[in-house]
Length: 531
Image (cartoon, rainbow, N blue to C red; front, side, top):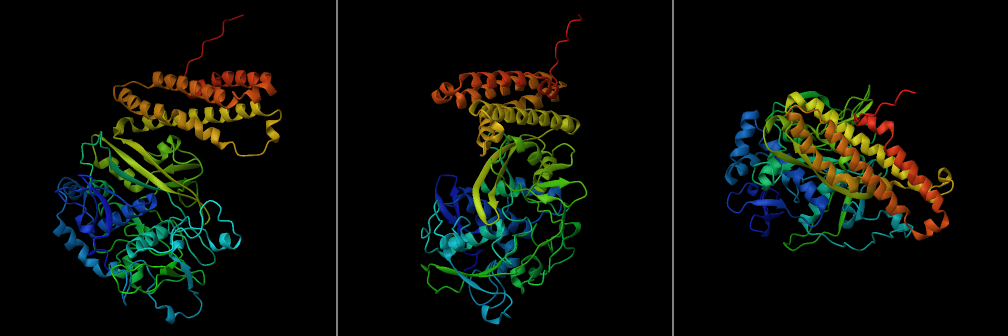
């Protein structure tokens, strides 16, 4: 089975048909595929990155003009087949030679330092309970035994998904160059505002970079094994060996660097045993090897935003409890204002803003919130991406930063005052009340996204946006009081101490109209009369 020859990618076509296609069929003109259609959200995210990596490796445009030409005139199936054929051998799934995303060495040839372990096939799924959980009979929420076998296509998709997210999993099992559970942000067509066809080809090509864009990696490596590490013996790490990036260099059509410009290499090295040669075969077990590639240093993956820190290496962003909300919008789209810790958008998000001059796109953000090797939640969100003129970009970002900071202040006030209404000594109470903050962002998210285009339009016409900041203050105040009332209206609480609830609400009202928020949102306060 070769991933370039076999129809294995699940898609939904323009007429609603669900089918499997080969990679070269992603740009079909008649009844084109419009979306990936896997049964799992994490599979869809992984397959999108697989196809972007394939296009970036085999069809990277030489410059912006070539990128725009292919955006307007997608390649034919024959042209894609010809481009992909250069690396045909890198996409073999089984057989006796190198296999996609699997260890190059034969298991019987290992020197004893890397210890193979046989696992049930369900362990390829990130949420599957681990050995320790099973031993302790602690698989309470996700039970064992739900998946006992996978077809080859599902198994290879699960393997690639696992490698992209690469959670740490015991001694010598390495994370990817983005760490475990990275946040991925992909640019996509906005059906209502971009003016581009909402098809799979356009949603993929928007994330392919011209060769002129500098990326971290290794200079002038043009052999297939430099691009696809599974075509050569694994660079193992049993003695702490690492793989470091070189300084940023432009992409080269003959040798994109490992990792950022190609599908992420295996991080533990993993090899399913050769399955029986039957079309209806199922896989029940796979073998894992520890001490795979150990990435270190300032790698910068083009599909992931980073946290910049003064005098330190940038860190890839990872989803956190609470999900992906509008409080993250500025860093994921434009860049947060200067500070000791600030978030910069993924390279593909940054670059697209200089390519698309009109209309609106969206950013598809997704990833696992991981606690080491334990997935706490899968988060996914769609964020609007506006084309902001260069002359107002800095001011627009500053205004949006004020909107988000004001929301953070109000969310914290609500949480604090609800606790004061609930408890006589709120400072002594243990427990996570983060759900109150999350609820505040959910209550105000639609208003925030409705305000953005109004703010942009106002600033394009020379307005400083102060009236809209005042409108945002009214929105935040109303949401804060409504949320407070919702969580303190219990008859039991009111009966216990209605005075405490009333005092907490009065305090919240004063803080919402206090000097801190008004200063942040540039609301002029009336001057006090002279005595």
